[in-house]
Length: 51
Image (cartoon, rainbow, N blue to C red; front, side):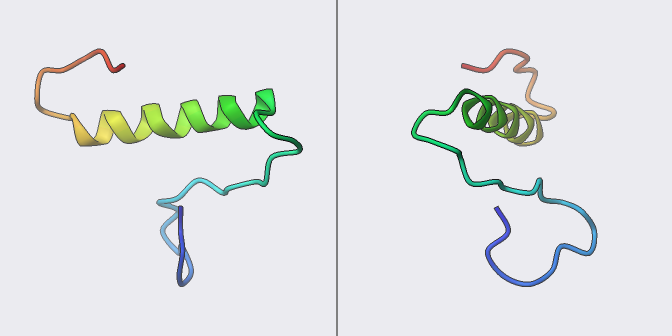
């Protein structure tokens, strides 16, 4: 999540407020962001599956 400044290089996915608590589309977006982050953090470690 970009908390300050402008993302001129498009490194951050835009965050959208959920329509309700545990909204399915918000949960799906969160899962996508977490998976993308895990791929970046674990790149080069040989770990291919994330919890």
